[in-house]
Length: 289
Image (cartoon, rainbow, N blue to C red; front, side, top):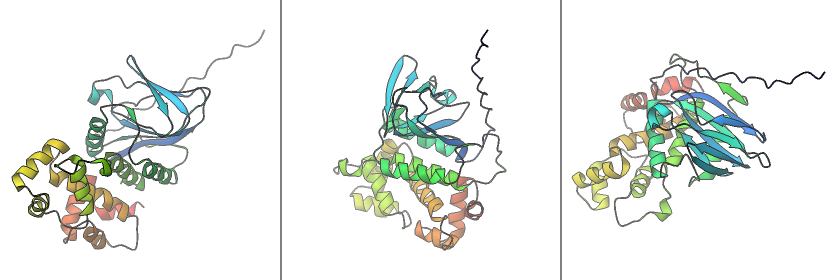
């Protein structure tokens, strides 16, 4: 009599250790053309980023079925934040996807994800506006990890790694608007983002910015908060700190050099802002590279 064949039980993911960090990587890896692959949208209180390079699949959430193809990005918030079922991602058995995945946490990371989803009509899978940059950043993340890495049990005692910096960059790129299609006649989110990126090496001056836009400072700040969901000061700091994490990968640049390149004359004040957003000092961040 032939022996019965039992499908091995997949170990349930461990509940991640809580974090107070701005960005915290939980797991990272990639799936290559597995015909019957399936996975929950995310786990616990973490968010999930999925970058589909090629192939096909579908995402089931409640009664909704979303076709997933190469060139799409998935962002799924935990049920504790979104109030929705996290859904299940499944590969097409005839043309299974090749995708990178990254499960993560962090108060600033969650805020960015909320804004990205809002800008994409709260669709869990969408086609990003700057796909080549996303592919490049995910490829850089691959160089730091094996095919599957689980850091979900690491406490905040572990200092951030380059992976957290690259994650911050991926989310920052996903939040970038498609500048060339922005309406130039008003204070749109795209124009405000572009202005802050164009002036990333200069100290933020709301007086100068309001003059450049031809409006009062009060009007600028009020409309910016409405269209961005955060204040101009907060967004400017976030953009500058995200770029600082990239510059800190360059050992030839001192902390003071990095500070100047993101518009801070005083390196000590730059370090204070960096710690507020990233949870550690620039020197501590660099020591992990």
